[in-house]
Length: 200
Image (cartoon, rainbow, N blue to C red; front, side, top):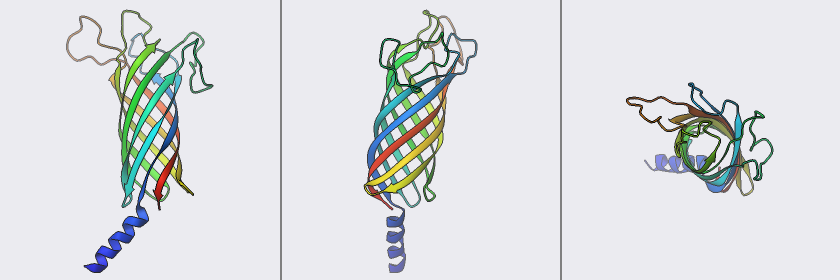
């Protein structure tokens, strides 16, 4: 029994990885059209925020809190990550977003899934029909992989995700009844983060 406890403590220390840090994301979005008045071309945004993780015994979870920015025509627009990929398309929005991801760990590889939710407190151009309003609340299902590398102060990591929109981009049209399946966003997400804390 004593050997089992000692072995468990050693394994726990070997696989432990805990920390807090900063992250930056570039996301490339597109809408499933379904005949609705939504952007028809790819558009990108950027996000920056805080990141907490807790991995033990080869599996674990992480939480993130982000500020999302997509500048308008008269605002600061970062190259590539604040861009509309069509000349006649102009989207802009700002949002706060939280994510919960979990999964196994194998050496430096971390496959993940979870749930991401957010609230758009400003938006423009996501609906091309002024009679149709945008859903402020939204959710995504993330599917991705992280490579986490140890450094002196903790770890640094690189992630890639494909995220599937779970909520309709636009609100239900007036006068419709029953089940409404509207256009949803999907996105390719690329992330860089640094973590301070314990790592093995």
